[in-house]
Amino acid sequence: MPRTHPDFETVRSALALAVRAPSVHNTQPWSWRLGDNSVHLYADESRWLPYTDPDCRDLLLSCGAALHHFRIAAKALGWETQVHRLPDPAKPEHLAAIEFQPAAFTPEDVRMAGAISTRRTDRRRYTSWEVPPAYIQNIVAAGVAHGVLVCDVDAEPARTQLLRAFEQAAWEHARDFSYGAELAQWSGRHAASQGVPARNAVSLATDPTVRPFSNPSLPQAVVRDIEAADRMMLLSTSSDDRISQLRAGEAMSAILLTAATLGLATCPLSEPMELTDTRNQIRMNVLENTGYPQIIVRIGWAATSADPIPATPRRSLTEVMHPLDPADS
Image (cartoon, rainbow, N blue to C red; front, side, top):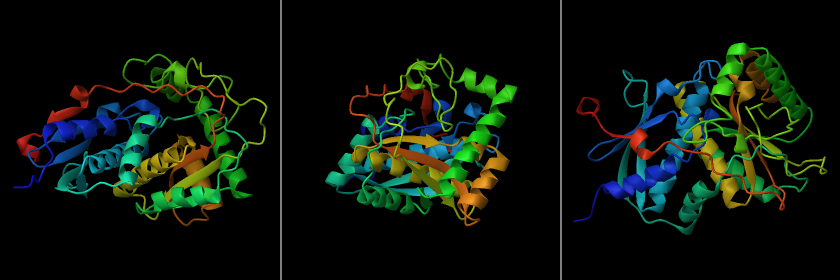
């Protein structure tokens, strides 16, 4: 009789890849609970960043990325997933209930799962090499497939407006003591299992899209190539509810992994969306009031001479994986 649910080791293997998802300041704000025939994703609200993420949007985006990573890993292991998002209105922290059915995997499924282990957030300057239009089309399609609008912001004046929003957000955050303290708490000295280590934060950063993490020690790889040809992929949704933000995180993951399979460097960017004024500026001046901006992914070519980006740390599975409480089933 065929199995209708993956065994424990298969689920564990998929979760080991799911937790490699990017998250705001590498907080990893997720909790996975295992039922007899299902897996459940919960938001770990104890890891919410109130000064960086006052609307809890970054937390939901992070969890959405982990959900997509899990689905990609499960498919490469031979299991199709059916997701029920926000299944219990009485428990808003319960973000997804996942059920399974056996499915054949494809070489593309394996490539996408393999990209989970090789993808890194690269905050360095990218080169002037152009990203081929076919690559951009594939990346946009990967995000759109998750019900999210993806805008390639490569023309003026939209790109200038976007960069101005970054500059203003950085200026406002620089004057916010509580934000600065929170940023310092989650960067520069958390190399063991969480936070952004010094080795992953860029030193001598002049790009307004790069946050000033504590004790940065990652050198710039490109110092003479002034005319960078990076692309800004702006993800937006027609609504601004929790399920839209969760789906935006899934789309972000799809874009990051697709870009990684193409050999591109990527960096998720959220700072202008964390402040009401700059988020509204992006909505009006870049999206022309056609959607709600959720996240930006910067894409480009890293220098061939650049050192590999170290992997950021992750909490152990024993910290984030638990049996499902019967009261929650």
